[in-house]
Image 1 (spheres, rainbow, N blue to C red):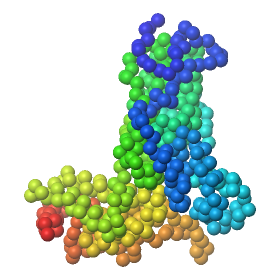
Image 2 (image 1 turned 180 degrees about the vertical axis):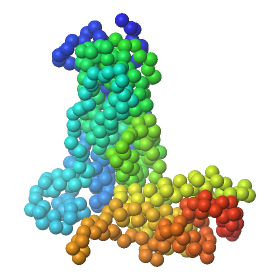
Image 3 (image 1 turned 90 degrees about the vertical axis):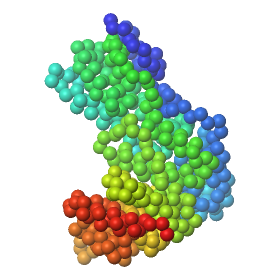
Image 4 (image 1 turned 120 degrees about the vertical axis):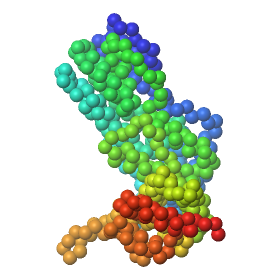
Length: 473
């Protein structure tokens, strides 16, 4: 029999010799504590901050503390709120319920009201499900890549049953029931494979090809497959084991280290990252298990670091002016810098949408920065913010009936006098006409399209305009 390579799994290997069909137990393939990077922090400062936050009168802060439950014992928050005066809990509840719902809770007990606060502060979690991809006999023409993709999709489906909040808790070293369930289902996958390989040993070679394709996909599904192949007698040369949730837990751990001890900001950042998490993983057809989760929050950082909407506009202007100076500092138009600025525009637009969705209380503040941005002719940040506001107005739209027709009714967030800047007709002609009359820090996307259509002569004129705008005052 082939010799096993050294490869560390949770639990003891059952091995081919000890396998017996119908056995009452299988070894666990995973340990939750080994699936996150070691978090070397002596003092969980956020627990004290969260406890103090529960005694504030800000319903948004209290709601976020309840949502993430950053305590060893999640009952800490519940007990703290039980000790708050009934009128305070009533005020909190009023901030969480719709006006028409308030009479339904008027006669509830104090305990029932606290329970309702907890229920309304946490997102609805999807139901947990059982592993449902089952191995089948593969013929010589079987598409091993297709099998690997199907297994990866099943693993992705189970990952989406873990809430963002529980992954945050897990990343910080707390227990997380849904993470445990996720790992359990992948151990069930291992058990299905082990049964199959012992029933059809001639299939092991074919599934070894599937294992190769899984190496760049779900690390959990890959490890279950590799363990089953090894325990069926196949020697596999495998890379060193790394924490499966490292792509997410590592960045979150770094966030809590870099922003300590500012829990109020971290809770807002987590709200924004929760929206991003849904977009990256829940709504994605395929999942990138190796790419680190992005925790950048530049726009929220600009908001948090500003004293007023005017200050926010001033900060964005200075930052954009420095960035755009790199376009012309060599005496010619730098295409590489231009492409990065174009990418940054799209990123800023998306970050604005994320902030609006996660923190709707910031919308008014952002809107107040629009006129100052227009006044200083910073079309880069201005149009990106307008684009983000428009995206959110579409996302938050509601259906209504008008003259017998059902229509999608948008929230009006973009000032009517600025709508022309986003009009995409004929490559944003309204914006480009305005820019000719009042040049400034440009909305670079249409200028790049214009260059692609008309060539270098367009860039030369644009370069001269931009150089004049960026001259030191």
